[in-house]
Image 1 (cartoon, rainbow, N blue to C red):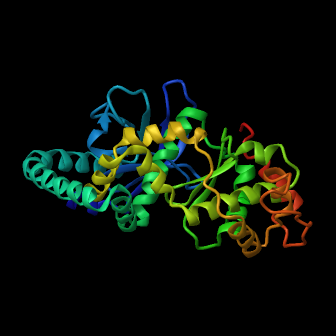
Image 2 (cartoon, helix red, strand yellow; image 1 turned 90 degrees about the horizontal axis):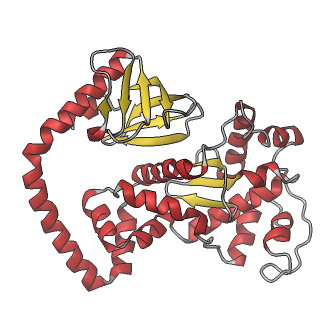
Image 3 (cartoon, rainbow, N blue to C red; image 1 turned 90 degrees about the vertical axis):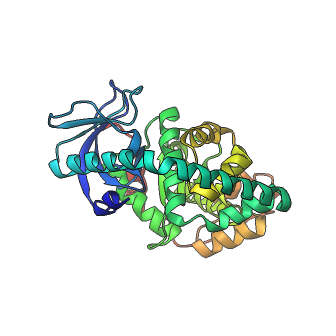
Length: 334
């Protein structure tokens, strides 16, 4: 992995097309752990490409044209000579090292899988899943969440990124999650449950909560509720529970989850019910964030079964009126 380490901080501009008929999107290209990471201009991850699978479509020509797999028409165009050469160097290094390491890796992996399957049988799948969750680093969680988001965008459409709304969205993230908290808020085209959290602290919120409501406290409330649910229930646990024991063993032993598993999970997101925090935890979360509970409760708990009678409370404003209007334009075409 020496070649990858050499270029791990290298970045360049690129032009990404999800399909041959898609509009080109300007992206920032960087290296992840055996992946090529594509972020939009707001530093929101669009997709991850597996470096060993990346294919050069026009060897010897500039700008270089890459694809994540031969059977897809998704492409990435790069003019930067250093980045092009770096990608080629890393791909060759990965491909060259694979045959020498594959036999030993297979023996070791099979042995480890046998040990951990036995451990899972002894502890029970739930205990083994909890042990696995406890050792997954934040960087891996972010990579998993970003990959799921990439699959989800292919199903529902691109995330909303109109520049008019990105600044107030960033302010909303700071307001609700803290300035130094990892993660981000992403406005998606469709999300029936309103908001949910992916691994890595990636919060998805339905564009309808932004566009169709006059009170930013409602959208903020859905985000706070989703984050509170994450704090009481690890989103990565849902991925592993949905995928089964084999995926948990693979994550524990290799640090990876198969791309098709993450794609399957992305397809199920719209059907997943929220895992809500307890009402008392929600009240505490709203209080800590200084977000009024009444607007959220009016939609989620109109009969008062969860919260009882919630008086309109006075708290710090979520966004100014002008910021909220700009945020409501984040899904507009540009």
